[in-house]
Amino acid sequence: MLVKIVTFFLIFMAILAMFGRLRFPRLTRRRGPGRPAKCPDCGQFVIGRGPCACKTKG
Image: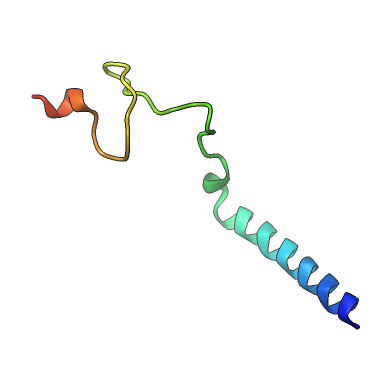
C-alpha cells in the first residue's frame, strides 16, 4: 500500500513539473554558472541586477 502511495505521489509530481515547464518555459533556460553576465557597453562583469558602473558614472 505504501509503495502505491509513493508511486502516485511521484507521478503527480512529474505531471506537475511538466505543467510548470509549459506555463513558464522561459525560466528553464537560464544562464548557466559558466557564463557570467557582462555589460554590453564596456564588457565588465555585472554583479547583481542593477545597472553597470559605466552607466552610473555619467
